[in-house]
Picture 1 (cartoon, rainbow, N blue to C red):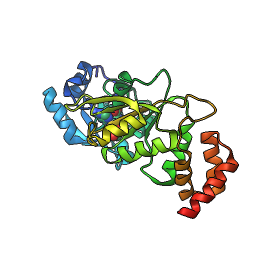
Picture 2 (picture 1 turned 90 degrees about the vertical axis):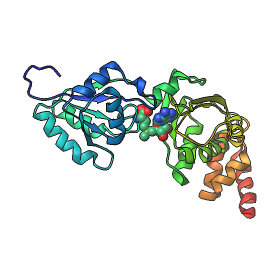
Picture 3 (picture 1 turned 180 degrees about the vertical axis):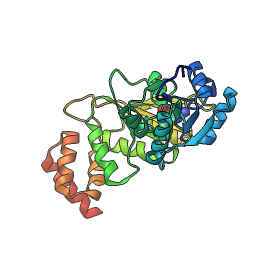
Amino acid sequence: MSTDLKAFGDLYVVATPIGNLEDISLRAGRILSNVHYIAAEDTRRTQLLLRHLGAETRTRAYHSHNEQLVSETILLDLKSGKDIAVVSDAGTPQISDPGYHLVKQAFSAGIRVIPIPGPSSLSAAISVSSVPTTSFLFEGFLPSKGKKLQEILQRLAMEEHTMIIYEAPHRILPLLELMSLTMGKNRCLTLARELTKLHEQICYGTLETILEEFEKKVIPCKGEFVILLEGKKDKTLLVDIEVEHVMRELIRELPISKAADIASRLTGQSRKNLYKCGLALKNKL
Ligand code: SAM
């Protein structure tokens, strides 16, 4: 935002608080106060932040439904020399949030794209993780249900790195239950809920103990969640997995032979025995 004459404006990609407004950085505050306008995923939420900063910068809606269309207008404005900031609803743009199309187009057009780092539920959750995070796989949101979710969980069951997953309050419990069935109840995880907010809660345990805490309402199914799930430790065999449960779930969606293949890979048990188990279960369904 220099006052020098320049052909193009700059695009600032600004991280904003995930709950506590005090987490806005000094630099982010200055940029948001001084740009020509802010492309915001949720203009009402951004207005609250601007009020906190005492800034009167204009906002313009920029979200997943109009991302491609609005990107073109923003690009024209950048080309005419205007400095523009892009923010998501909360946290860092592009982390399971819009921003990708605009950044890609701006970069291709020769516009300077400047990151203004700051809050993200991803980095905040990692910073309080009790499962190892020297390397991790960020999965974002998983499909909400059905075969696609089953397939992804079967792939993740074999993953050795810690997995980081976003989930909404109404789906957290079914997802953890399905994880327990697919990966075994002894898998460790950190669950970060409502980070930086009034009811912040960081829990560590196994899938079994965390599910018990939900049952006892120690952890409410409310607010926003990040799951940090420890990777598979044993390279050859999943321990304590409830084989019968896994087969029961798999044969609901797949032919018995395919279910036996997958269950054999997951558990290390004989495919032949699993096939027999599948036949017996199918008769009971
Ligand atoms: N870009 C955002 C970021 O950097 O944090 C993430 C956006 S994504 C659409 C929203 C998901 O992030 C929520 O469903 C939840 O899984 C996670 N999340 C966002 N804020 C959170 C918070 N304060 N505490 C825990 N999880 C949060």
